[in-house]
Length: 380
Image (cartoon, rainbow, N blue to C red; front, side):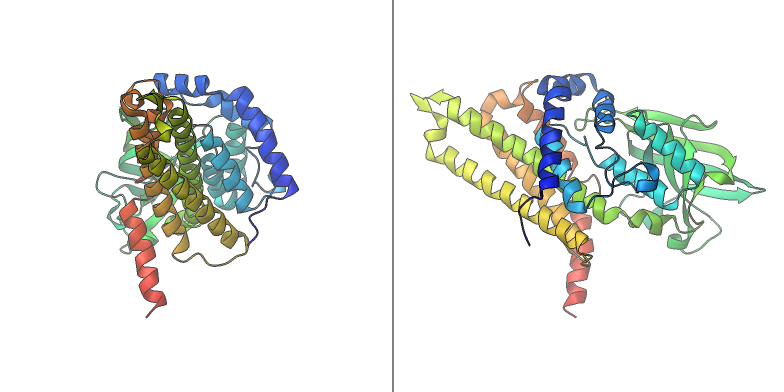
């Protein structure tokens, strides 16, 4: 594969760099983190500059681009130090563009245009995360209506979103994979309530418990085909893992650059600590991991663009990048020493946010389950 960038990619990245410098400086990101505020203004700026519609079909005002371009952009935003700043809303919207009704598509695209998060993904439950077959939230269809009951937990961006893309099962269907459907549920629907969960990671993205108590809506809230919800959601899982991996790469590169700069400036025993071999070893190993993440992400994106079946590749890429990025951030914290754990030092925020990617979008362990069984199958 060719690691060189096309002229179009170079222009996009240059334009994005200008936008990041103008609309997303470190002071802005630090303020968002300190106040637990979403980056709405930056999202709106992204949309106005045309970045938020990249990857959308032309008939909906978008510009089709390949997977490689999308992950390059996601990594570049993350390299600025902004976690979950680009890419995930696009992936969510694609679920609606591919499976939703025309009314649902227009509603979601309108929210994206205003810089809002269109919906939160209502998948995880207290008793069902990686084990999706254990999902207990129910959707009962009756007389042209559907009634929801159950609890979702650790739902990202629920307080920022107008809708919940809810995964719920028909209790009358025995096979859990055929019982799950996808629904677009307004967050202000009667019977729906939330409880914010305070956490140490992802301060600009809220997390909530969501309680559905006899929430009743017209059946038009169904997205796609009844009983095909899990299959619909799986369609974009590979790209989601790749975008998360690219964010890990970008955040890790940011941590590495901060650590290398600090090591060149911090003087101890009469010289910069970067001149001590133990610090040089840390920086070298960090640089190797950042390069490996870059290569892993770009090769996986290239496979997607060439329609090569990923099989175990996507899960391996997500697992490696999440784990390696945290190792880089952890070593960066060590280079900074006590300064690294003080509030306001960027490396501490990167350390916290990268840690969240080791379970967000699929845990390290479930990536082994996905990749491992495919590896065994390929060698059977």
